[in-house]
Image (cartoon, rainbow, N blue to C red; front, side):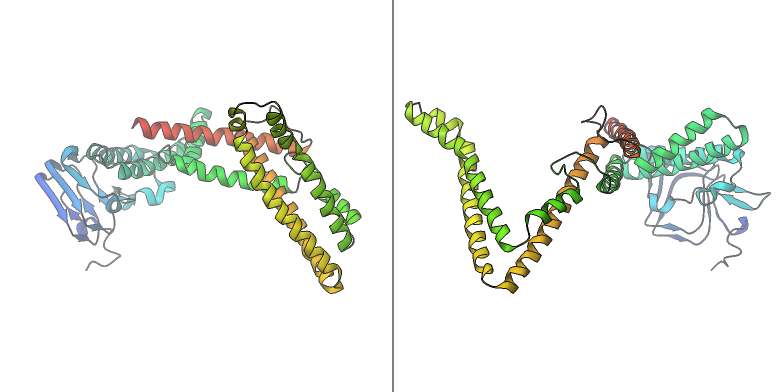
Length: 369
């Protein structure tokens, strides 16, 4: 067993550099150190499976046959390295900030070797994971290059890489854009929940509705009167369907007039049955509670709680619908909001456009590949 302080020394590497192999297979092997294959040539089959490399994998200048290569990304991930002899240090994905600009090209070459092997063997998952790590390396390179040259083209390319990495794993994961989109819409929904707006089913403000509730409902009898009024209004609105059926019968029209109205008729009779049961049960329950003061007060309390939760739930649905509408930029040229909320909707619309663009590009990229 090699001491941890000595494993980073070249004399303790598993060293096969500058070797020539027809076939090299490493199976069910644990390498408790670094594995050096620099400038090696493997003409036919190169295989590392069910194995573990504890430290670094050095493959600069290695010549392999991609068609005959079988690797596992878990064995290679974050281990592709360049050993700098003078500084006695490994440069790899674990110390991106300290990598000199001159070393990046060698690391790019290493990732290119592994990426080509995965791609040719048809391993899409490992190909994508290798590509993500490769692009992370490129992003660090662009950042360091901008710090040196202060070139704005380089800077904006760097920013685009950062955005692509965050939102869609550099075009390899379209679903990540959808996940982030969902969270963005949810966050803006919460913001809109506390901002006055007239979008959706519930147009009155919460406080206006609460004042109206207090002014209309003070006793259990008020609830009963409200139920009776609602029952009368509801069944009055349903007269149109009955008038339509009477008109068909009066003029002796053909059966297909009934067929045209069949979906509405089914919905009408089912809803009528439900509303009849609802009003009948509710009115009987109110009549019962009127006789008992405690039960009446308890009923008033639960009805008030129901009203509060209903208002909050509908308000939340309205805010989610508003957020989705703005995010997908489907419903507005401009919004009814003014002041700061208006600028929030513009920001969300821009984020939505950006994320949906990333999703589309990622999806097309995956389909093309």
